[in-house]
Structures are given as C-alpha cells and as structure tokens.
Amino acid sequence: MIKVAIFIDGNNFYFGLKKLYGDDFKAMKFNFEKFCNFIANKREIANIFYYNAPLDITKDIEKYKLQQRFFDKISRIPKFNLVLCKMVKRRIKGTNEFYYVLKEDDIHMAVDLVKGAFKNTYDEAILVSGDGDFVPAVKVAREEKKKVENIYFKKSASTNLKQNCDKSFLLRKELLDKFFD
Image 1: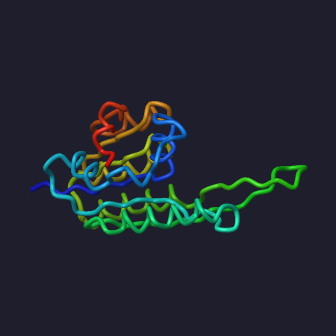
Image 2: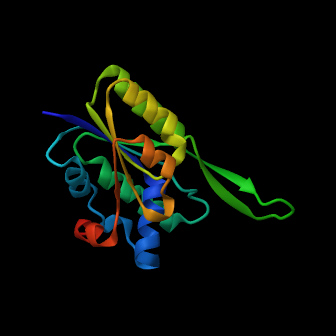
Image 3: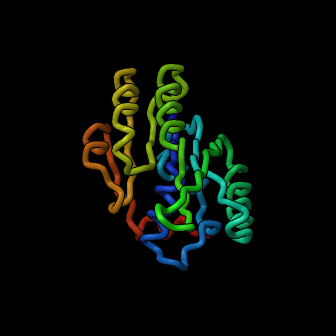
C-alpha cells in the first residue's frame, strides 16, 4: 500500500478557512481526521504534520485557551504530529503598537518534507499550503522519487508550487462543508 505523509501549514489553512467562512468560522468544529482521511484517498497515512504557534496568552487569554483546546483535540488524531513554532512580537515602527509574526513554520515543514523523503518514511507527500517557498523542498523530494501533491486555497495559491508538484487540488467551500462537525 502507498504510504502518504500530510504536511499542513496551519496558519495558511486557518486563514484560508476564515476567508471562505468569514468571522463565524469555528476552528474547533473542523474535523481534521476526516479531512486527512479524505485527502489520503485510501492510501495509508504514515504521518500527519501540522505546523503553527501558540498565541500570546497575555494578549487574549480566551483565544489562547480556545487554541490550546484545538491543539489538544487535533493531537489525539492517530499519527498526528503538532509542530509548535514561534510567534514573534514586533513593534509597529514609530508607535507603541505591536503585531505578531509566525516564524520557523515554513522551515520546519520543508525540513520534515525533505527528511521524510530521504528516510523513506513516505511514498507520496501531500502539502496543504499555497506557499511558493516550499518549491525547493518539493524539488528535493521529487528527486528522491517521491510524488508530491499540493492542496491549496485560491487566495494563497502559488503557480510555481503547483507547477512543481505532481498534482494540485483547489480547496472549495462545497468540499470543505462536509468536514465540519
């Protein structure tokens, strides 16, 4: 049986869903296990990797708690690996206001994709992101004779990434509706 590894850019996925469903979107209601089984499409799931960063607890304790419950829920999915990255606080130049930047997620994802290809932990990879920064990692995986699929949202699609993958698939609202509990 073909072994598949699924790599989910959590931030990209969250904002893709939020753009489709608006402010009413509730991440806790999305069934990641059902979604991953669907995209694996009868292939054996070797691993699922989900990359994100914890929110700043001091900024909004309720959002932080909600996110922690979400992380706890998805961590119970078989073969699921929650990869926590850094959330870096940056000052808006000339003000006392701050914004946050997610760091290290892309590099962790790229390294895991390449490491899995070299260690032969999967036959095919599914990259759930529209970020063109993953093209070099995809090329290395394909050089190792691994197939790579790209699953993306329209607003975050990289033509270069799609062209460098064996297959690509656009996530539409009609499809995603069936993954909400």
